[in-house]
Image (cartoon, rainbow, N blue to C red; front, side, top):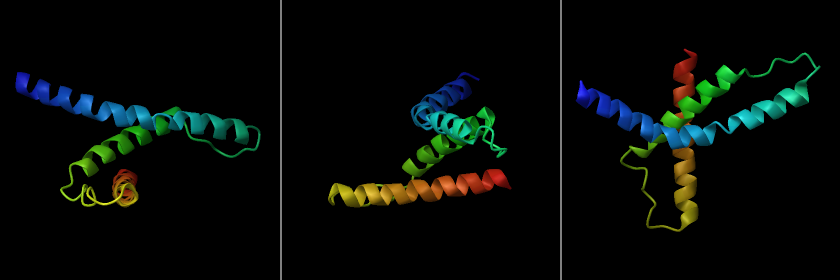
Length: 101
């Protein structure tokens, strides 16, 4: 049981930084809510924003475990940033599509 607890603790600690980063989506949700107030358009709920942050946080961790994530580490920084951004985007889209099914 202790080994399981340690693994769960390790996973929670690993997912915490990207999830906290993506929780800044709350700011976007609050701004959207303020802009759309009185227009009758539905806005995101806090639960939806939390789930999105958790999905994106886990997607970053899964993408970092891919063996080809550091394919352009020896090239100029622009190549590495563009490559990782595309991988993170594809992983986040895949995770989001899985959640919608």
